[in-house]
Image (cartoon, rainbow, N blue to C red; front, side):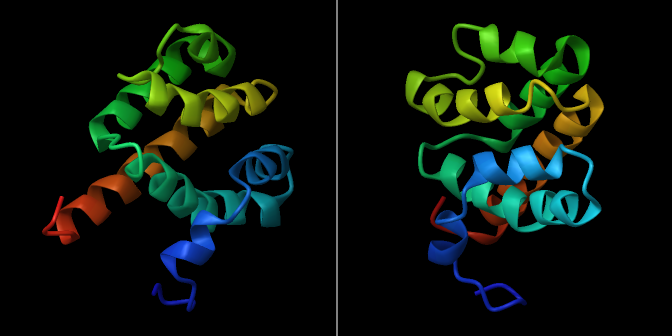
Length: 123
């Protein structure tokens, strides 16, 4: 359970697509939720398909260089098709957002993944 009392199961139920749309739309409260609970929810979803933090960090650099539309157009923006199936809808939902903000969110997701991996001895 995190400090706000949400379990991984509760966070995993969050709609990351909706959080992306709201958070990239300019609303400060939506952005806070996107970079907070949304980043954790995304990390949990990516953990379930064995994504490494460095893969998400690399994807952030791709978004920073070419934008989310370019990243979404790649055959596999993450190493496997199962991983791509998770992240592609997020990239597609983020095409109207500022590239830098999308890249920073992906970096936040990568940081959460790295932190969770470092504290989970079973991974």
